[in-house]
Length: 186
Image 1: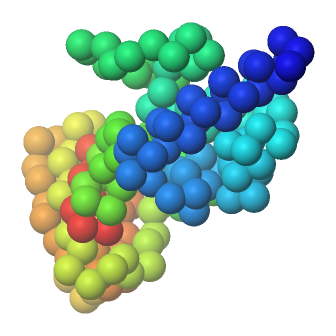
Image 2: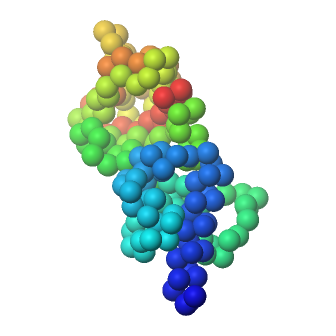
């Protein structure tokens, strides 16, 4: 076996072990990382050599240390995700940045997001699973929250708890805004 083969095998094993340790399916990893399910499967079988960008997306989704991936390092006492390294969800809403703060293994139970709205930014969401609730706390500016037929405007420090199993919307009011969103039982 050559050195390149050994690296692919070690990388495949590390990613597979990280996914299984977090109880995630290939589909869940694909959703979290933006990497296709078939590509994740090929990488885990050492049949494909991922680009650095693909590997970065996978390690962020799995909350695995990118630098130590091939070293097989164990868990650290304090896990730190630097501000610039937190995964960001793109293509949702208008004028909104959605940064993922929760660990990958929390998907479905609870998810934590840092929402940053430009002036007139909007995050318009379809209903989530039955019983899903959202908890939104405003950190900067003002936001309007709509859940079904109900609407509330929130200022800094206000928290809204509402049903997310129906159409719902969060929008900046009167300028830029920032909020912390916790999605429960999605």
